[in-house]
Amino acid sequence: MKKTFSTLAITGAMLFTGVANAAVAIQETPAGDKSFHQELKQRFIEGGPGFMGIVLICLILGLAIAIERIIYLNLSTTNTKKLQKNVEDALASGGVDAAKEVCRNTKGPIASIYYQGLDRADESIDAAEKAVVAYGGVQMGQLEKNVSWLSLFIALAPMLGFMGTVIGMIQAFDKIEEAGDMDPALVAGGIKVALLTTVFGLVVAIILQIFYNYIVSKIDSIVNDMEDASISLIDLLVANKK
Image (cartoon, rainbow, N blue to C red):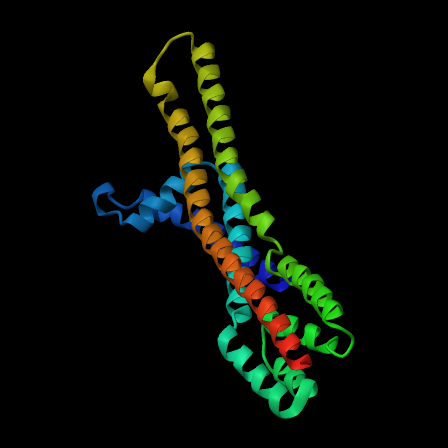
């Protein structure tokens, strides 16, 4: 995770530097010939390095967490029915040790829960059930790791944008007060820059919100599979005891 953060932070710094260098070229490009990419970079530069840089950091860190979680959750997904069938066959043919070996060779939290239950199958059904419930809670914590940080960046990005807008508006009114005259040309640039921070903050929040919803739905799906698998395992152990 730390390596992912470091890599993306460096990438973000390179991107920010590239955007700054591209501003000169954009200024020399005729307005009608600008692509969407060029226009986006120019608007980013016009927003100012202060709040726009912080919003960019929120995007980079948020994407780092989202990508890490998506990879982890996809690797944690298990074919529950296939695992249950393999464990059942192993119990019938080779006993608990054979079933534990099947779980040991299968990735994902469901296989780990099965292993914990089977590891205490010789004690009692209650002991196996308690082990499954306890280890299920541990696995849920692993699935939800760092998701709260993602929700923080979703809330923080637009708030920073709004703060930049408010500060920009205050500066615009300061210029009006100093000039003693309401000249639109005097404050138009400042107001435009102030509004750009809000726009980019909302864009970052929208992007991260899409990733967040996908991650939460993926976690819910895996947790449901874990609960179903736990019930199936206890039923399987009861039947095997008989």
